[in-house]
Image (tube, rainbow, N blue to C red):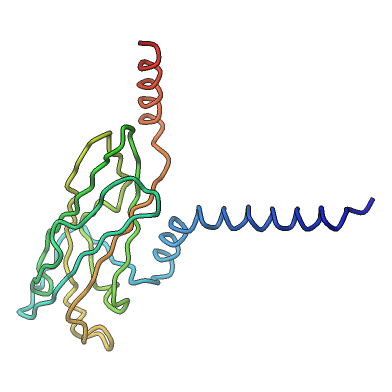
Length: 193
């Protein structure tokens, strides 16, 4: 039995809308995964401790923040820029605030510009390594400990970099099961009172 041409068109359009909606929903987590796997967008390195080699040459590190559309938190760097010696351990903070009346979980995706510097930007500890859950009205300072690998000065392309920009984008994720259960219990107790 053949389908009516108008029905075929509606089914095709509905399929396109569903696929596009799914792609939009998965775009930030997919981009984060893609950057980590391929090194695209200046994926950073990780280390357990700071560098043993500290040069006299300095480099500027700028910090930026953004968030996924409709993500309810306020999110910003607490300093816009630091200058440190190459190899020196730096410490920066980002601030997040949940102005809603519900717990919200988020995960940060990052990128480094210029991308040539990404492999030399080394994170020791970062809020982006784990998911973050903020309770209603909670404000937190989230630390980032890092250094710029001294090998940057000998790299064919990266040796010309004098300023690195590290950007984070927060997107909403599902609440961890324990937090979701607490939120559900809280809603239940409000409605029974």
